[in-house]
Amino acid sequence: MKLAVAAVLCALWMPSVSATGSPVERVVNLLRDLKDKLEMDEKKEQRVYDKYACWCEKTTERKAGAITDAQTDLKAYGHTILSLKGKVAALSGEIQQLEAGIKDNLAAQADATNLRQKENAAYMSETAEMKQ
Image (cartoon, rainbow, N blue to C red; front, side, top):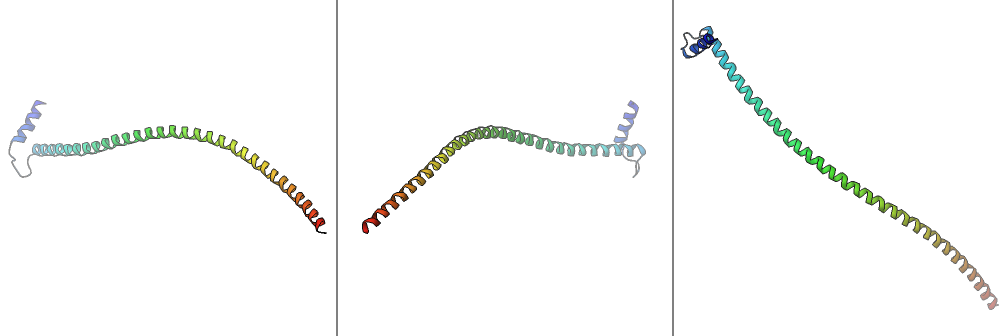
């Protein structure tokens, strides 16, 4: 193992013998290129992860706030519904009383109209008798 590492290090420090290089130099260059690509991929993936993590944090915070607001709204709406149900019950009772009052008033009006018509008829007949 130590011999392989030493060979790789020697290959790194030795100037290239030919334009294509020895097989060891080509392997070393491939490993360097691979290392560089891996480092670039790591940076790209880290940026993507950071962006996703930031989005998750913001979205989670926003959703938690929306849930809290919705729970508060639900409580308020529940109280509003209960108070409006009470008002509906009270107003329904008042409506029934007023409808009964209207019926009584219409009956009283009809009785009064009948009485006036009878009185008017009696008056007209008396007036007619007096004129003759």
